[in-house]
Each structure stands twice: as structure tokens, then as C-alpha cells.
Length: 169
Ligand code: IMP
Ligand code: MG
Image 1 (spheres, rainbow, N blue to C red):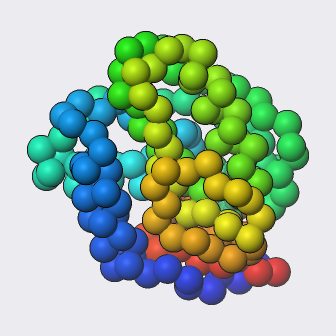
Image 2: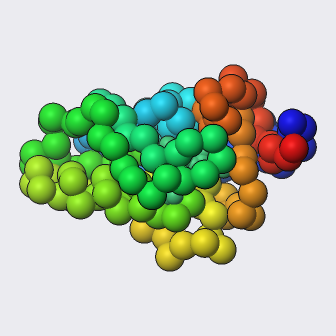
């Protein structure tokens, strides 16, 4: 397996500042973020601090879903940890990457039942070729390759890279 660098650490950090400004335009003061574990936690940690610089007040909790096995989506979504503080809040879902869009669709439908005041989705990466996106904010459109780094894993490896790379065998 080989990793070819695709998005640099610097590009990621610049994009996060842009995303924070976009988000700030739509939310008034309080945002309750739902971080989709495990992949989105690295992205969220950086995004949250940029949002704070723009005077937004962030609270958060996590949800955990699993759909991938190795480099393939299994098509079945398994909810392993649910969010509990959604009712009447302005919610921003934080996802690492959208591929088929099934995970995002599942999460949105699931959270809508909990009666949030509003619900938006922010994804760092979107494989646009493969899906009609359900994200309100997207960092980078990416090709239909398997990406690792900055929270994204291949069988739990490579989440610790500060950049995003393409994994090839
Ligand atoms: P979807 O349901 O097909 O949109 O898949 C979304 C989930 O699959 C993401 O939350 C990731 O956890 C995982 N995933 C999709 N593509 C990749 C990738 O290229 N690298 C690592 N994880 C991925
Ligand atoms: Mg994920």
C-alpha cells in the first residue's frame, strides 16, 4: 500500500477558515455540533476553534455509525452511538467524507425525528462523481479514490496523518 499526498496540511487549514466563515453567515450565535465518529473528530477539533474565533458558541456531542469494511461501503448502516441533545437546537452535523451519501442520508433522517430547530451538514470531503450531495458546506470535492489521513482511515490506520492522501496498492 502506498499513500500519495493529495491535499496538504496548509490547504486543509486554509479551507477550514473559509468553511467557518460560510457557517458563521448562516448561524446566529449557538451551534450544537454532532460529530460523526471516528473520522470527523480531527476535522471538527480544528473547525470548532475557527468558529470560536468568529464568536460562535459551540457545544457538541458525537454519533457513531459504521458502514465501511476496508475500502468498500457495505451499504448497511449500523448506529453504534446516538445523539441525545438535539431537540430545539440549531444543529450542524460534522462528517469527514461523503461517498455514496447513504450515511449522511441515514443520519439526517434519524436526527430530523428528534425535532431540531434547524439541521445542516458540513463535510470536509465529497466524492461528487458518485453522489448528489446532501451537504450544505463542503470543503473539497475529491475524486472517486480511497483517501486516508486527517481522521480518515484504512482499517483504523493513517488517521494520524496531518494531510490527506490517496491510498493505492
Ligand atoms: P457513504 O455512506 O458511502 O457516503 O460513506 C461515508 C462514510 O464512509 C464516511 O463517513 C467514511 O467513514 C467512509 N468513507 C467513505 N469514503 C472513504 C474514503 O475514501 N476513505 C476513508 N473513509 C471513507
Ligand atoms: Mg465516517
